[in-house]
Image 1 (cartoon, one colour):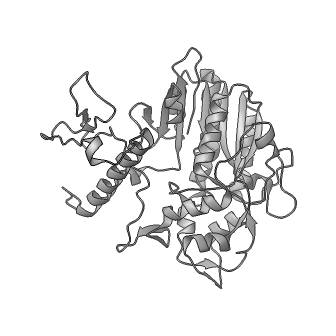
Image 2: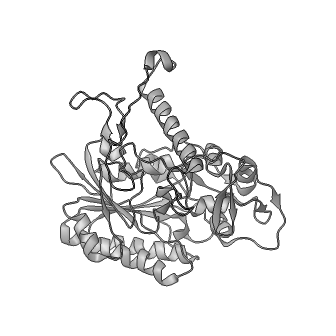
Image 3: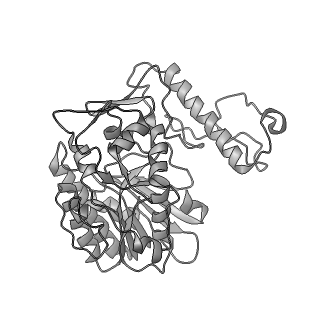
Length: 396
């Protein structure tokens, strides 16, 4: 959305289009492992944001290598053929190796010890040797109320193991990560190279457990994902602050407080995160206001054609009746754009919650699943082109 509001054309590439994807941005339904599809998606782009990643080790290491290494190679080859100028890669602190010692700076040697860190370091080398401008954002653990990946699954465990629970670690909020990606995409003066990203301060898993309302107990084992998160080294943020002029808006403790909303009413059972029936879980991924219905019918603005205002809601044309609210009487004032956004999003979130429970028109439990849950994060890319005179591209 940031790129769209700044006047850039945005195109996403993934195997499934999220319902939250705005209609103002194009989308290509394809797999990053499909070299021809990647080339078509990148045609004419100038900046590419590459965020596709499959966690490793996983149930199928072959797929992880195909997505992470072969997928990155497809992106780089397509950039050469289409003339893209810059790539922004979502890397990780794990490229530095294990925890302990002084905070790592961008010029320190890469000595990854985990498979995931090794693959990230390999992609960084590929990006640096591709002959284009490049930025690798080495991020700490990303938190926030909208996070719904392996991090949520890991931190939605009913209990946390006491082992290493006091080990200090860095985190960053999703909003700040997106802001830095946006800066890396649009700022043409940024020098090529890596940059560390983390919020101010450090936290422990014991603090995270307290914020999430999870007990810390002695267990005979420690889940691999927890070991991975705790094993990340601390990073030096001098380049982020002085060369990039970037300061995260969220401090570490604020990140975990906000992330508590992501796991509220949810618990991890095995490899699944389930919602507790007696708790209302946060609606994390709202369908875009103009998302088409399951059968492909696109909504129309409720107002008269050519005379639409900012509160005209797109609605399925098959509904014969429209309802209107008198903002000055029914809603509290003063009514600013921020309060309008919060009100509309709150209404849409409550509608999603009701629909999930009533399941209107559902004939089976399979059909009643949230449509946006079908989006796979393991093969996701996007591209952007500006509407201005110089073309730019992004993959996310």
